[in-house]
Length: 234
Length: 337
Image (cartoon, rainbow over all chains, first blue to last red; front, side):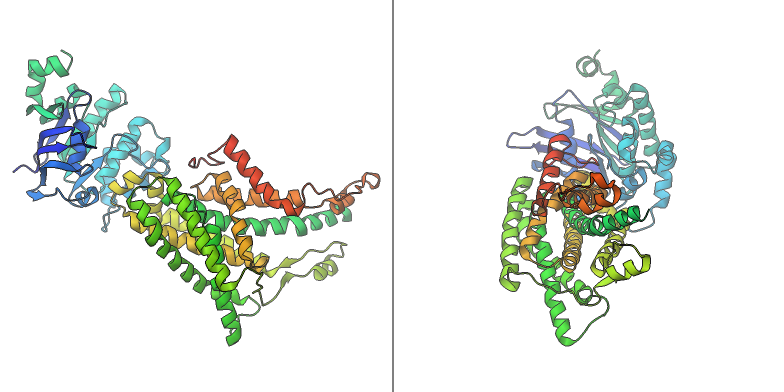
């Protein structure tokens, strides 16, 4: 079984299901992108994997362990870490405090992890004593990812991390994602910017109406004329 | 020159020192309200009566100690009884949380439901206090009365006006400084304090970071209960203890918290002193003060009191209404109720 294996997920927020037998798998140290048109259930799939919505059907396994019944907090303890799309930093707290809260579950000394994050995102070190709410959108995104990395997760989940940031910042951000992957962390992300996301992804899942439409490597999906035509704008 | 000195002493005696004392008492109360709002997201109307309940415990233990002959003269015995009152009030707060608010938390009820529930709690605590200790005034201060006596000051300075500082006033300001410093160190430096700030800032993200809500809620009641008893006891030592007075303290306390920006601890303190000084300066009769600083022919022949002390709560009320109309987030950007 894959490192993360979400099989036949069916469920949604209310009575109406948004996901219909949707399956997502992630291998260790892989970057996986979930792409698709608006309302395809990308973020919902992500939330289902993280336990933020209940599934009517299907299962989620992490390292061969059934985590279906676990709360999001318990999943964090299992090595999953989630960066929400919005309100993903503590705006009234400093950058450093944001990172410290990220390490809340850790009882060991986390200063080396913090140093690694400062190395990855030098601007965070520079602004470590500034309130996160005073930072720009791109910098906040770095704080958000930094916070999520403080638990030293094995699977980092990003919900539309580049929404609302400029193309240059987006490019830099994907470079950082590749850096993070080098440390052995698997990354699962939902992306609006499908083209750029698939370019860095090892694997992509194209969702349409809560169902898997295409699953393939990032490169092959980018090269697939049907995918290009319907989702990547030609 | 002596006139100016006399005027200053007069002003200190009747405005500055009482305002500082009252402001410190309000600040401790408003901090509790603002903290509960920050963590549990509702305006706790039972806070005034929690203050009354805690103070009642302090009074009962004080009387018991007095019977046993235990004292820490010249300090008031109530100071010795304070920890017992705090423990009792915190236990009551947590029991109420477990039996009332937790139920609504589980159902994810909107804040207004919590607010109404807190009014219910307010009535229960109110009744409980009146049932146990009665609705009347209770005096429980003992030990030395003054840090600085009126006559002593006059003899010392040779001025016509005297300055008195009651022990309870000095105690209030010192205890408030110590407690507020400890609270800010806790919130800024400790792991639990940071978790509380994170939870207050962004609940969802705090949960994603593994912060346990029940633990944060426990700390919130622990701190709010402690602050309530300290504020209530200091107020009782300074003035007197009467359950109804504590209930009506709710208005200036809420005015302070909202003026400063609810959910914002520093705002609560600044709000409290603003409300206290507004009340004291507006209800003070300036006749004597003006006599010292104005030329003889401008001497006022009436009291020059803007508002009778009977209406002092109107000051808080006006501040509350004006803030809610003009800047509902308060001085520091707090949350909008």
